Length: 106
Image (cartoon, rainbow, N blue to C red; front, top):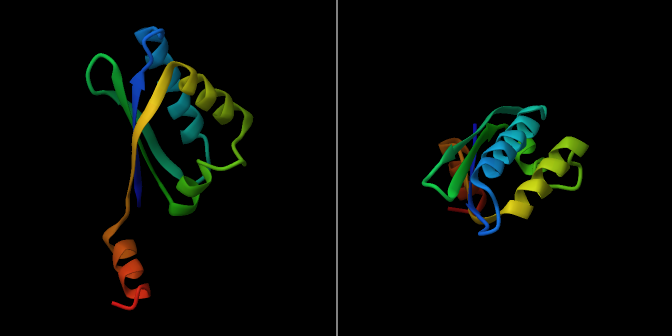
């Protein structure tokens, strides 16, 4: 199952407690989506959080689209108001990476 990692840095005007509470709301909204098996956040120091989400490829792809449920959209915009996304990685399963390699004619 692929994993999505996102790193957010707190904006100077934002409260750390608010950042933690908002990150928790984002993870809960993501977990409520069909095909998502896990979504948690971790502190990576005092001003940085990392959101780790695991799920089916289609579910992870749709978590960045226009089909967000209201709760997910609300939580995502609340997080954007207090933190900025500085890095985002998608970690594919080895099988998916090999499939892509073969499709490229290798």
